[in-house]
Length: 202
View 1 (cartoon, helix red, strand yellow):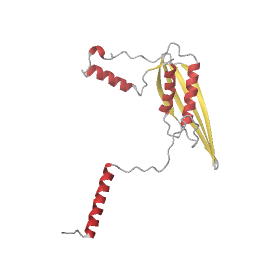
View 2 (view 1 turned 120 degrees about the horizontal axis):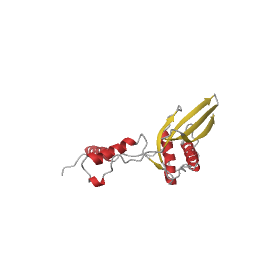
View 3 (view 1 turned 30 degrees about the horizontal axis):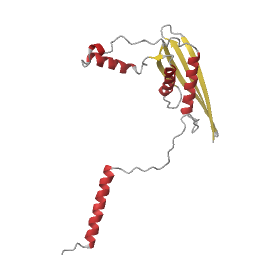
View 4 (view 1 turned 90 degrees about the vertical axis):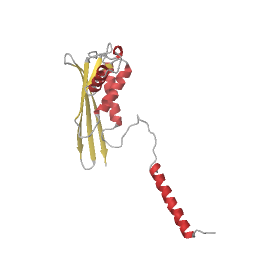
């Protein structure tokens, strides 16, 4: 009977283990969790830094939405479109996110309808062309060109900031301004502002 040397057997087992470990690492990578993650209250006041944050966005959206709905200007569910919202601060701030929150709250109120914004218009044009020019759809089911509803009002806004700091204190003042124009007449039918001041000390 031929006996395999103990040293050779150990080497073979070690090689098999390494090969198996290599296969496992390729097929199912090991995920390590270095910190504990918990859900928090999305409406809780966020004061991690004095830069623009989620609480600022929520306060602005609530103020603008409340102001628009209180005016009574939305009689008969008029159509509104969103134009530009300029970020004039030194931070990167997604102003589209602010307007999305305002738009969502207004749509939920049932008092206003929104048409596609300038940034969203191309998707609408592409879909109309696809339905009418691709030859894939029944003619009596396609959306007709030239039937879009025009906006009666247009929302335009801007976000500005003033930053002051010394060796111990940093003060940031934000101001969000929103205006609603009558598209046909070019007049400002509504305007409001929300001011936010955030101070941090070392």
